[in-house]
Length: 115
Length: 114
Figure 1 (spheres, chains in turn orange, yellow):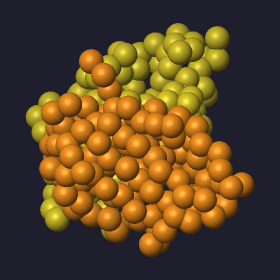
Figure 2 (cartoon, helix red, strand yellow):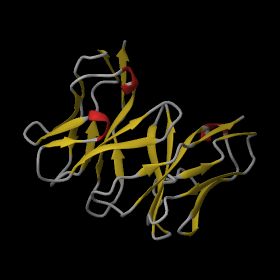
Figure 3 (cartoon, chains in turn green, cyan):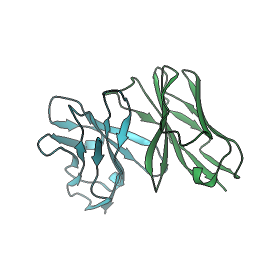
Figure 4 (cartoon, one colour):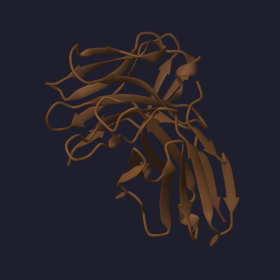
């Protein structure tokens, strides 16, 4: 079975550029989560969707970050303009349900470096 | 605030010896607790979960965890460590109530020496 697919795996770009990260959740899963992982801050939940609707975006650091889920099989996380402090590994995860006992399945992440 | 704590940044164990990775929780009500593992350059992988029922939960790769309500702990254990178990381990809980967030601990790096 295909897991959560993220692209690109690595992204290096200059400060000020727009960055778009992509995620394809596991087919049939109705919840999708975006996380950011850094050494300093650990694993942070940025936003999550249930049935393509954003439920909680309180973790989005600032207005430069936006996320969309136009359909059940695709989501994007966009940073515009990007800054060096945005450098991190960004993970997408999906789950069969919105909470409770449903485990989340993670992609292998996008390693983002902003120069 | 509700949270999970992983008191050890790193655990070192010799191959073949039993291992324990500690997690304590401060969660109201009946907690839903999870363990995940992260190998280098990979995403987190689900190992096991406790929701209700038997306090000893068995998971993937021979791991198990014991839910202890009196000590508010959910330690991860394995009877015999393998070098391939070396990875970063995260304890987590579901926030419940108005939130469906999965709240992670800070992680414990497990190093198994051959």
